[in-house]
Length: 279
Image (cartoon, one colour):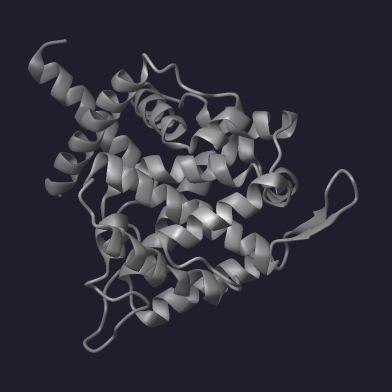
């Protein structure tokens, strides 16, 4: 493919991926004097405002979340994950956008909607252990897996110079969303997040159900542009996982391939940003 053809192909991928997660479908306007949930000077606006990094981070977050047996059970028992993986990514992207950039009322409505959905998500693990999507400990896990993945992606694919002070503020600022959803004892710094993962790791599991959900999440798309984009983003998401999580998934990238994965994801990220600036 010549230069023009390659640019056209990448632009098609970028456009398709943007539409898959519903970019531009939500109202993020704030009325005068409305502070929203997260201040506009928060690092969260930069992290969550980078669509390309959020796309990669979002896939990594789902791979991380499913290692928790109760999080996996909610997906396994209450969602059509084989056909709804893109819907899950879209809903997550829109929720993050509204609660970060939108007005306080819009954010509260989005949180209330999620809580109402959680009211219907409960059951039992194969060993009989009950689970409930409103469990504060489970909500904390889902939140930490998400925001840690978002920040990892931002540092790798957008701005590695984000200071440790700003990173700590990021975790502190986004904690309000998790708490309004019902989470408790939410980590508010890099050190607290690291300590949290160390505590949770003994409770995480990998089994055939995790493998099946991960395979569905990382499967090629329905058309050439989607397949190409998801292939790049999926490989980058696996590469983004903490080493211990990638090892649990049995998906550790070959060290010799990591530079190619990151180069490809970096190129896709730049093309997505370029495509967004055209609109």
